[in-house]
Image (cartoon, rainbow, N blue to C red; front, side, top):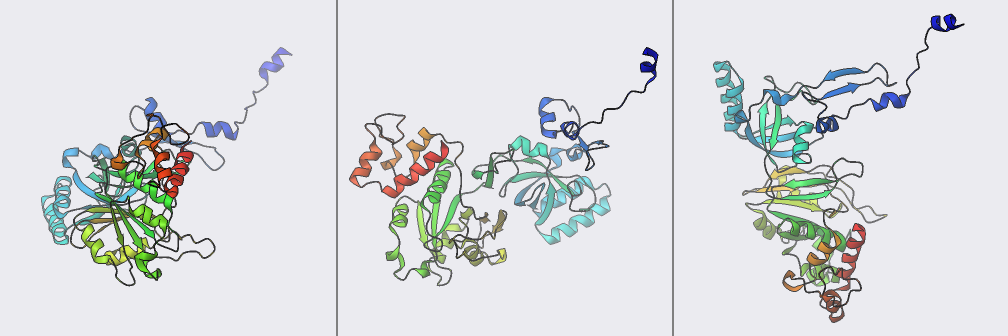
Length: 407
């Protein structure tokens, strides 16, 4: 009996789908744990999770010496690539350092110089975004190196001629929350900006007090001037005299307010003067006329525009990613997707209570207790201002909505 058992062939236990799935390698976690010492390794499975193929991922930065890199400006960002503008001298530098044949280098240099500035597609590795803490953003200054001698051979990652070696330090950012299932909890809408231009319509859709407060807070936290542009003024029969109380209340705390109408041309010259020589990020809710306004200011942008939905009065998304455009006369205009909310994830309730716009004269916190949240605490200066009419009920209600969203 024992001999029969010894001679019987052992049955192979078929691994489950879960067993196969657990073998998948998360490159970023492997790098952090130190398991992968050289190049990242990834496994590829068939649809049935069988016959895993293991291969090493090439590191495009191996060919790049940072002293041979050139600086560029990010115009657009995609999933694993970005559009980067480099000037003629930078393109010549790449050509001269990467092409061994002197005659070929001279020919390419002449071609690039005749073309002036050049826009190239550059890939970026996961390690690049890990070092930054997120992906490169529109407005970033980056160092580019050449990893392929030939031109772009396709649209896939790794087929591009250039690679982002490093993202240079940012002087300012404007952020919004990332997707709930995203590794990065916040996403940068734009980098290296001089001012935030928030576009809001006086009607269709109606002015959103809470949304504007969130943007104003985000601008204040990054020490960025806040310019409020009120669009569709032609829809108000009485002009500025017909503005709602909520809009008038918000105008009193904004750094600058410029009412405009693309149809009549009202306020456009004043807005142009405010944009010259600066890097300005445009943002706002969907349907407020942001794309239409940018097309008027920068005709080369040729952005798609849409109408407000009749059933709910909200706008349709026409801008799907951020883009940078040259502003006539100097400076940049950065168009960001129309969004319905902006988060303040890094701010706790006590900080919000101390810096909320419009609560304190000269932005000096004057409540009796340092941890006052302006709810029912004794000695609250905000409640005293509410009773005296120095702070509007709409402003206080906006504060409560933001405070409750953080708890």
